[in-house]
Image 1 (cartoon, rainbow, N blue to C red):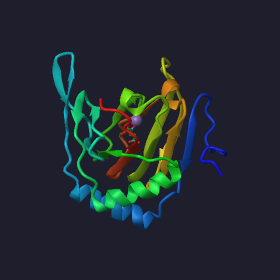
Image 2 (spheres, rainbow, N blue to C red):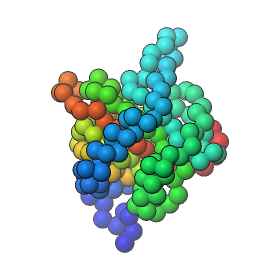
Image 3 (spheres, rainbow, N blue to C red):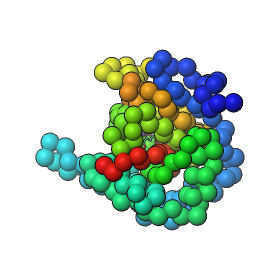
Image 4 (cartoon, rainbow, N blue to C red):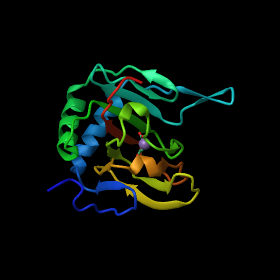
Length: 200
Ligand SMILES: O=C(O)CCC(=O)C(=O)O
Ligand SMILES: [Mn+2]
């Protein structure tokens, strides 16, 4: 059966496949601990109106040698795949049904860490990017809004072990965010696997 034959989530102009219990909870916890400990986390500065602000989370970019990627305004060369990340990539590729040559790791240390509204529509991802997003650790809310609209149209709770695949025209029409929260939340690592088709 094709990945998107029976999407759980029906939003117009989007292709979303959400698998809340994709990964066993014990494995998710093991991967979280290992990735938190072995990743060379960075916190790049963003330049906004001439002022520097640290990105409100920690990041790392891994991938095949050709998969350089631009985020936070900077071009990042990929770190080489670790055995664990290579294993996770192989499993995620089976669901995605296509190769994925890079992964962005986002580490949300607590509810104060966040990711602002954006679409994953960088030119190097090609026309209709597939982004496969694996969640480990504390649950966070993932909001979706139409481009150009200020109203949240749909929210998902991304629990540990869940996998969200966005494909097709999703990034043309929709933006997503992970907002800050005052609720106490456990540390969370999100891995977004991508296919970089050309150099940025
Ligand atoms: O942390 C998340 O669930 C979202 C991550 C994301 O949107 C991204 O890396 O582009
Ligand atoms: Mn994104």
